[in-house]
Image 1 (cartoon, rainbow, N blue to C red):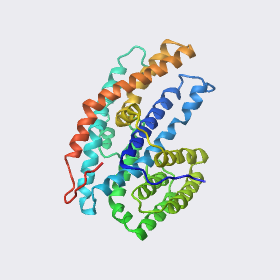
Image 2: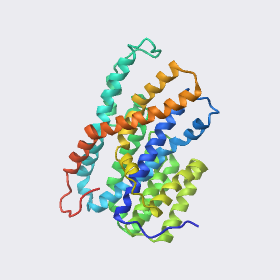
Image 3: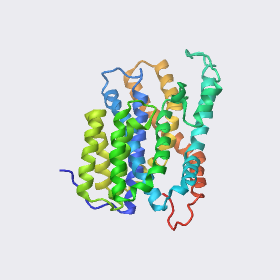
Image 4: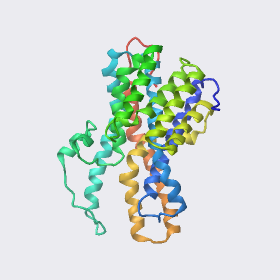
Length: 337
């Protein structure tokens, strides 16, 4: 039986940051260990292969945090433009600057005598599509493979901006949940949010329980049905990974400053670990075949990336957060999270 205590307190939300940080770290190690660095039967590589599930945890957390922020801010549909502006100011500067870093690194990589890839080609169309997260719709590659998830998140921002007012009414809330759950069966494309709606719905249900607008029994029944949907669409391992955030967020309080801080700069780590970290991994592959040394270097690269990402957070991401917070919704006495 799923054990749930009362909805957590405001201070309890440190667990969100901690969980977000661990999810980003899992994705990071997944990419580092998942290429040709380690043999397929290596234990660390096998464990790291599940790190991609961190992406789906991001979706669940977004489904929880965004409605909660809108709830606190007394969001209405006429504030749509403010909501989108706040999200873009929060997320786009680190994203766009990471693109500049990627382009520079792509060019500099071609100057190395060890480089074996294609020549550097500047594709204006490919670059321009990044500004609206549209690459997948025009069959243009992302400059960073993790950007596809940012496109899904951006689609969720637009979706929640329209449907959030309906979440406040009991009848329309259930209508939204059932409708979106049914719609999720209509597409398997990784370019659309449709495929991933069940994960966002879990977060939205957790939000409703958190603000005490649905009962414990309704939550258990609703999420059970969503888990069946996830199992049908994705498989059992995705059900397990989706169950984890619910159990932890509802039942556990995390105050560990290291984990909470890791969550604060998880977005920077997510943006940078492929263009910078994977280049370090490729250098290791060139200069040593020793598996033990490669494993050691993988951990060292991960620590280095954590340090680089924290600096990036302080210099780039944190000012973006401040800028976003300067935009406040009118007629609200509560500040957005």
